[in-house]
Length: 258
Image 1 (cartoon, rainbow, N blue to C red):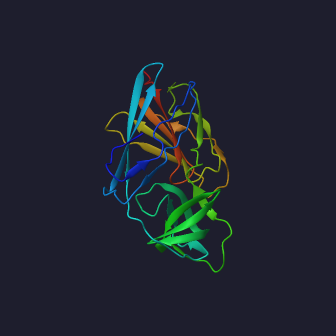
Image 2 (image 1 turned 90 degrees about the vertical axis):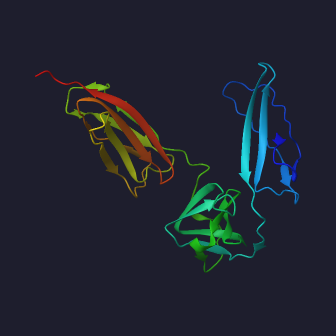
Image 3 (image 1 turned 180 degrees about the horizontal axis):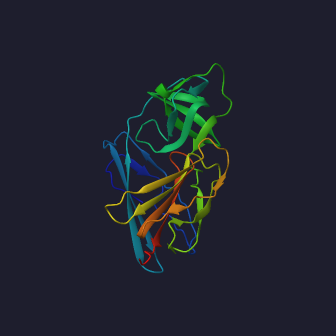
């Protein structure tokens, strides 16, 4: 790894030997670095170079990170409760940091400190995050562990299985069956959409509502009305407002001779 930002960046270790990497295998390395007061840019730029000695090939990736001034820490209440419909939990004390979790109204979190307009909270499992101070209120007592938090780092999109009865039909309704399975639950809607290929036809959207359900699967997708010619069908399954899966295929309805 190479510093492309100029002065103020110290990379403790910039080179790793990975050895043999089998097909499909993943290896992880960490490049420790720190910023010093000599850093004047508002953006950190690093270049990562990967070299395959056997094939003699290289790959290069340029990484860019925003740099923010240090925000001093002040004491925070022992616990906070989310007062808005949904509070986005960030990896750092800035709205530009990646979202790592969602805390819904009524969620309670142990507070670790206040950093300007942000409060650092304990997410459990050794993970921490930051919520906007204006989105939470002080709890009446201490909070031992977080509740009402949906982390992003272990959210896997639902799995969609569609049982296709061929991709062509002469019937007015195309039979569509399948199952949507989630590690947590299928929330919101299981949606399938019929999109005619012609520009002068309006799309038809059908819904199977499952909002608020606790089930981890949803089966029995309903049949589609089929229009003459080729149409696109899109099946969308949502685990929550941020995590969803999509399955797309085309069907063809044959036109019957008069």
